[in-house]
Image 1 (cartoon, rainbow, N blue to C red):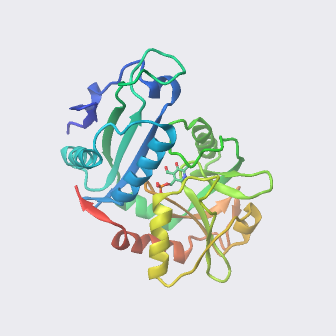
Image 2: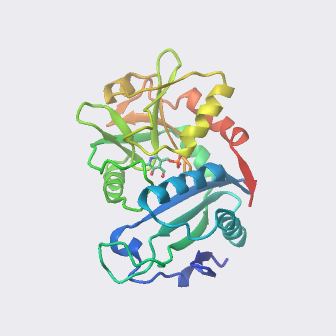
Image 3: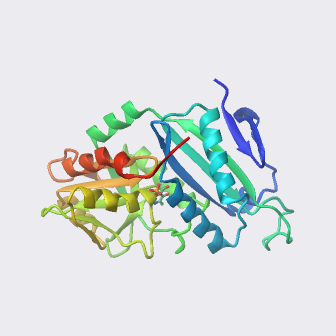
Length: 287
Ligand SMILES: Cc1ncc(COP(=O)(O)O)c(C=O)c1O
């Protein structure tokens, strides 16, 4: 089946979808992005994702490429044209195309927009969740503004590759004091021996994940309490459960950290319950 991408106002064949060599995203990683889950034909939590996009654009002084409502229509259209029922929709906005220069481009330069969508296999994803995953830990080496969802992801790319080469799925960035920040592309959580969910506050040092935000509501619905505080790698290893969240993963249990088992080394039941309840609680817009 033909894959379709949206590039700066046009729906084009994915294989022919290109941007200019002087796109600021290509030259400087001068851009931001969002990834929404598509589940059962719905785009999940799109309002929260577009709110966060607005925040990222505002922080970096990049203009919206389209009116927000038009962008939402393009996202749905890309999902539809690719016949994605379960998968992802990705959007990227850069500061546009301009002769290479660190200064911002001249006034009037239009920001650039790319939207793509791809299928994922929900059966394989569930099997992965039920098996549980390994994480490794790596020293935090990113800039301080990781609250902005920029396309500048080189430390994340290197950390994830290191994880893969160690036979793990994700890498957790850890501060010098042993506190876990977040994964290279996911937020990090533990469940204490008393059944309390713990995740680091999102005021600084991590990306405020949309899945994380919605999971607060899911947890409340399941009668679980949440503590927003830092936790160390050692605490995570001793915890009842550990798990990660992201739009690309929903909730995935972690069963080993740096090769050592979390609790009995089996996926946690609370993590799997949260994963199960997520879709019902999240906002869903038909694509
Ligand atoms: C560094 C980082 N933290 C957390 C997340 C999870 O965010 P969300 O739940 O919005 O996908 C992501 C997602 O890409 C990420 O890149």
